[in-house]
Image 1 (cartoon, rainbow, N blue to C red):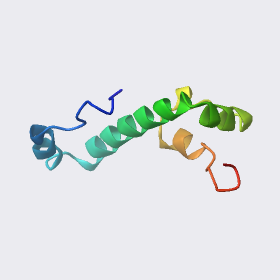
Image 2: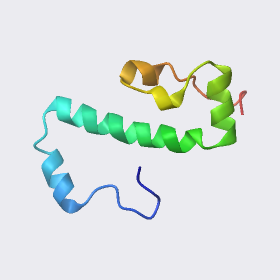
Image 3: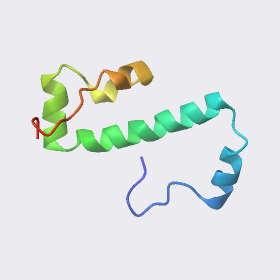
Image 4: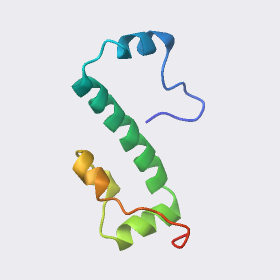
Length: 77
């Protein structure tokens, strides 16, 4: 998982991404969103919100799992 002070991409990575297949790009994007979800899961609100909905963010295996995460609205905040 990356941190706020750690760069996510270098210039070389940007150059490489331009040549990735759609499947490679989707895999990379999913890894990044898993990092974001893992970080949010450390926040008491999101951990509780997801637990109340019966979703374990640590079990994200694919985009279908990601889409099962409940949305957060103004009312839930």
